[in-house]
Length: 141
Image (cartoon, rainbow, N blue to C red; front, top):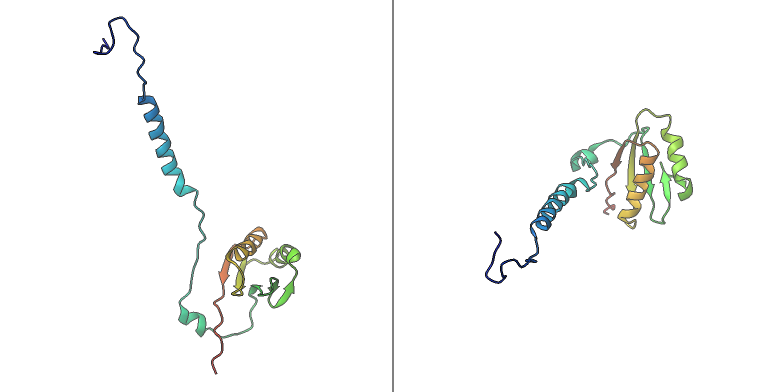
């Protein structure tokens, strides 16, 4: 019998039942704790040691370099590309290539979002591996 000192026998008690609400809150907490790490997006980055990047000879190669220039434009292997033509140019280059490797070189004035947007365009064109070229050091006299 659920009797208390405050209620008379035969009276209906109207106490709130908070146990189901606590159970629901705990289940929601567990769901959010599990789903939070899954919603993070990450970029896999492989950075070579500084010595190997400087020691490589500058021989002619068939590597494709997408350059984000300081004036807000793009260049592929030093050939200027209009921003609206970037997707079609990358498609034209990589559609017939077996190695889908692109290097990105950005000017210091470009923002992080502009680099990520260029990488998204490249990924959409089928590029599988994106590398970054190191910043050039100014010549010392």
